[in-house]
Image (cartoon, rainbow, N blue to C red; front, top):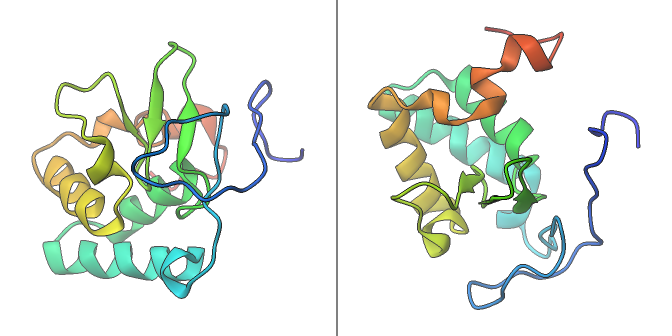
Length: 138
């Protein structure tokens, strides 16, 4: 697919619940409500970033590139770990919590805490922005 990284396969959309274990390399969230739409997810994280005093451009970049605003909530990583949720929290992190990662409100609160604590480099799409993306705004 154009714009898709080599070797990265997306599965057909399925409904993912907190009880469900990942069953495919990438599982897309079935959009059945406004809250699951990319437009809503983007507006929500941008609004929360502004409220928290975090640069909304950075937040927009991370969520847009990590989960495509919640459309791809599970993704395998090259180091044989898996990232989950709107912000693609990696399960190798000691403070990883699956239920929080899959919840827009909880994961956004945690991500904003990390960013404010100087942990923004945990997201490779931010840390490697200039190397991976010719249109990197940072």
